[in-house]
Length: 223
Image (cartoon, rainbow, N blue to C red; front, side, top):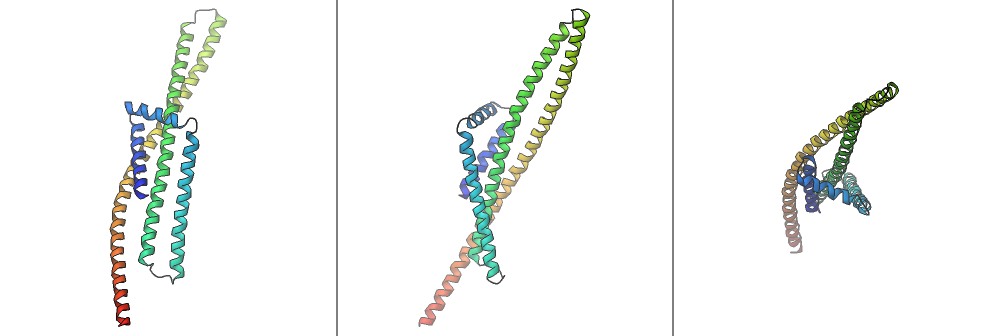
């Protein structure tokens, strides 16, 4: 399961990088996400996310249960088996949380990119209407006043749209910064996973050594 979570994090990080940089692959990624959000796609994604949340909650409950069991045994240091289980559950919960967060980042980035495109198209349409109104100011005085009023309203809409575009751009930049931080955190997770594997091997060696001691002591008592 840990390898599957690492693969999911790697795939989500790659997709975020595709969405951040304007390349031909970015268009393919956006088209793919558009298709995923149509039909039964949202239901499937919601089901998968709910399943991951349930598994995450189960892992947290297991860690709490192990902690309580250690406290009930006298409050001393946990036995090696509990330590291995605690480290495994902690790593799995961390990876599942990172997977859910990256999925949310992908959804928000896709939403912001679509919003930016719609805002730009709307702003271009308003600018064309503004130029058309300015070019058509050849009527009588009443028509000229009406056109000027409409032009003023359209210019205000352009300013509002430009302000919205700046806000969306700042959100995208913030999302880019978050994705870089998440990529560094994923690298930290990989290092932590290697360390936990090494600790797991050491704990297994200790358990084997204890088993040998117990078997020797049992054989001496039998003799």
